[in-house]
Length: 373
Image (cartoon, rainbow, N blue to C red; front, side, top):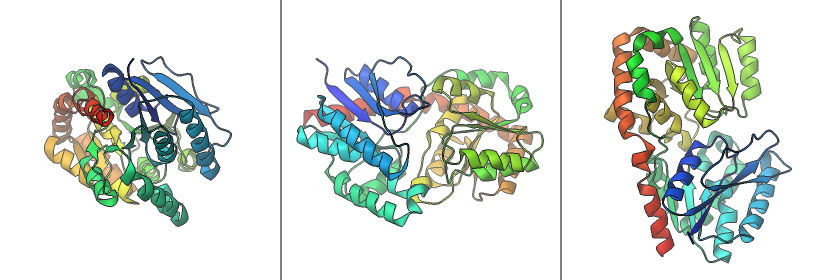
């Protein structure tokens, strides 16, 4: 019988590309994989997968009561099922995983998609931050193994918690999309003049500034793929500025559809405010998605993006997060055909290297070593 690994998240499973890739890799490596997440009132049906998908229904949708309820439900689920190892994805599922693993004398792994105690939503609430940080200092040094999404973040977490962190970057599956766009050339791309943001519509993502930048770009459209805490306020901002005809809110988009949408865009956006170490040391999956699709993108001049750009020359980095600077940079990319062509060509080349088929090689070894101990 294959060994069962249960991985846990607090989000819906439908849109989580990273977890789908991880589960697929572990399943192909011969493990019996279960992915446990959350069922929300608006959750769409799950797509078929080679691993088991479980969604826990909660009465509370957000806030402290949600975390309390979900952690209790998750702990009960884990205690009533057998497993060879548990993987807690981010700090908000670590406590039930750690307790269940210790009670059953099984290993517990920590998969840090972000520096949880340094995200803006936590940083601006001192008491909440203090509670999460206490939990992190209590549990992270005691897990059996840990990994994260970038070198810089891995070093930071290792220094903070005294635990080695391996690195498995959040790169997409390889494909022919970027090459197809490369063959189409700049003419079709310049005609689309679509700027795409994919990801959560949450605080600190530079989304207000991106919408305001459209005031200076009358022939450009902005597509926002995702939902989040700022969904309503961003829609209101777009209406207030009279931009509702050019700012399009796509809502939640399934991964396969998101790839198609990305191929229609001219430019990708990933604009983070320096509101905490999590964003400052981030290496977002959208950066790699844009590369894989063959579209140049705009990012903040933060350490991980700077390192990646020095190696592959695929981004334009900016050091100011304001509407005028964003508009200026978008205009530069759409009018400077030589710059755009160079970045586009480099994206297509880098897409062959920055692909999950290469990155996933690290993953089975982490779990194999964990289960041998």
